Length: 217
Image (tube, rainbow, N blue to C red; front, side, top):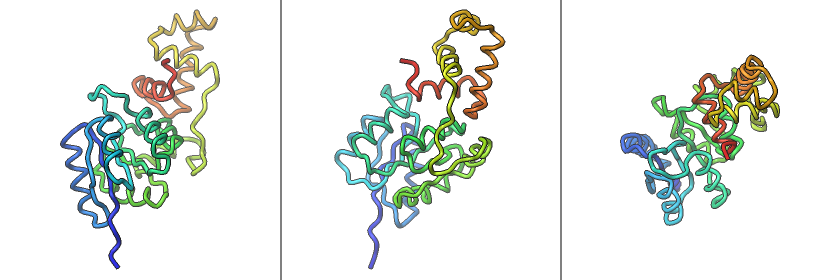
């Protein structure tokens, strides 16, 4: 008896990427691309009018003018708590990967690779099994203890949290030091310690982490 293919909704704001994902998934008999979306609002619309077994979505769709990233994932989780989500992303820092997994994402695929792992990720997610691209796993291995299914996101101290939040808001290190009654060298060290814990290497990645956590107000 022939098994019915899984209905997959694919979301990405770049038409070329969307076409590539469509081609990869259609080459797998067990998968059927039921609908596509190029914005956050289109994701909600397609989920409302299309039967869906797995959602495959880009993490960042900044050109759409709508709340993407964790806001999108959280809203999908709220509306469809049992829907498996596969996220395509180029953000390979361990901190963000841990956050996404903590928000119920079942599979993470490296958008910067050939994405030949994507069909496996979708099938794994449909079976409620976690899948993480090999390139991301190597990043996670840099965190002490690696990752398990129950591994919590890396945690910062209250002072480290306040320091990175203020820096992300545009407060200068000297102003942060003055407000917290500390020295600029101490602030710099706390920032570096926070980035090391989170597996982040750039200020841009740190800002994205702070934004994802909702610390910008």
